[in-house]
Amino acid sequence: MKKVYVFLSVVIPILVISSLIWRPTVTHASFNSNNVMDDIVFTNVNSMGESAIQNFLNRWPSGCLTNYQAPYPVDYFTFGGNVSAASVIYRAAQYWGLNPQVILATLQKESSVVTGDASYGCQYINTAMGYDCPDAGSCPVHASNLGFSQQVMHAAWQLRFNQERSYGNIGWDGDSSVYYYGYMTQGNRARVQGGSTIYYDGTATIDGTLVYMSNGATASLYSYTPHFHGNQNFYSLFNSWFGDTIYHGVPYAHPNGTLVRNSNELQVYLIENGQRLPVPTAESLFSFNYNFGDIRFANYYDDQMPVVSPLPLLKEGTVFKGSGPAIYTYRIVAGIPQKQHFPTWETFTGLGYRLQDVMTVPDWEIPSANYASDVDSSQHPVGALVQPAGHLEVYYLDPNGTKRLFTNQESFYSWRYWFGQVKRATIADTQLPTGTPMGYKEGILIKGSGPQIYTTDPQQLDGSQQKSLISSWYCFVQFNYNYPNDVLGIADWELASLPTTGPVC
Picture 1 (tube, rainbow, N blue to C red):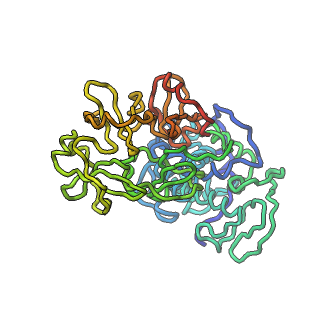
Picture 2 (cartoon, rainbow, N blue to C red; picture 1 turned 45 degrees about the vertical axis):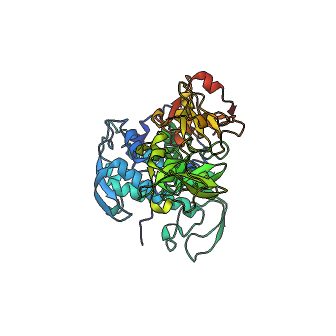
Picture 3 (cartoon, rainbow, N blue to C red; picture 1 turned 120 degrees about the vertical axis):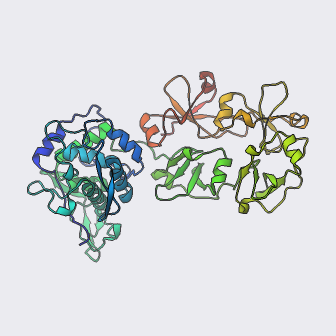
């Protein structure tokens, strides 16, 4: 048998008492015995990064885990050198696809090691998750489950195993030959590879009361702790610390203009109009005025979006070079990437460019097709930022052949531009037709003097732009945003000039 399969209630009665000493300070929706937690919350593996887990533990300086070190869980059986408790929790959550907040709430429910317990100290840290610990008898039953890292890694597996098997997913984790004894959700299910498929009505008797297992997360939590009081305590802890265990409202993904990455792959995507556009290279990301700090972990709804054609290798107007001395600007004509050559060094420097304005790219990213003409020394190429002599106005030279005014500094900064990039406009630049003013870069977070935070919608062809409200701090955190680093402050009148659409979530 690959693993130990036990279904737990609590460690021992004294631990139930100690965990109840902690009192939730925030009350949300009441406990629903038929739906303790939604699946999407249960498996929200990216709810907290390792540093966020450590910061959370730091809230309790006297807690057992704040400075605790334990072996690193390489896999279910293998453990390495000592790392922080936060690292152990994060690793287990990522390895099994479990919300790390579920682990934290379970640790507190079973042994009070998160906050520490004045009466019992940290004596239960080696059985912290209550894994392999029946209501009565030795704890744990098997010595291989003794130790903080073993408890966290094995219990995280057990919780996810219960969830998947409650749906009849006998192939999860490759353990199709192992029999599952836990509670089942409603439907035709088999408990083991080759076993009979039986219809289950999704009900079970918990403490003498009939309960309907509305989803796999609920079935898993009851299989782990088959008592109301344990699950009510878990619910209260989770609810107070992290928010509701139930997802409310319509499904939501990150807003347009957001870069997302799934936790188990390196590919980065740009969300646009319900689709994911792969970002082909780091140079592509930088040329579109993003940076690595903009990348968020994808949530469930992001992952449901179809993947379409990738972003161009470079944004049109990017000034770049390969391994050779030639310098180009990137052009796209009828969907075909082309390179427009700066014919001489004098042309390049005469237009105010410096080598620090040039992005170096791998040679394979240089288009083979040449633009119809070289860069003209009398006019800046597409993508340039220019300022007429004696004026404060700054314009962006658009690929459509117009110059577009930045109406305020905040709009300029939202694109990650800096004034060292601005060139002195030529006469030919100033004679270009004036297009619609530049709006804010889409997907930027903005706020005025009030507490509300918004995300900017894509600018329309007529120049209009709207903002969408992030309706709660819970939504803000679930999107993996950080305050104030990710938020651009703007004047109240600028904020008011952008009409507000429906909330993002």
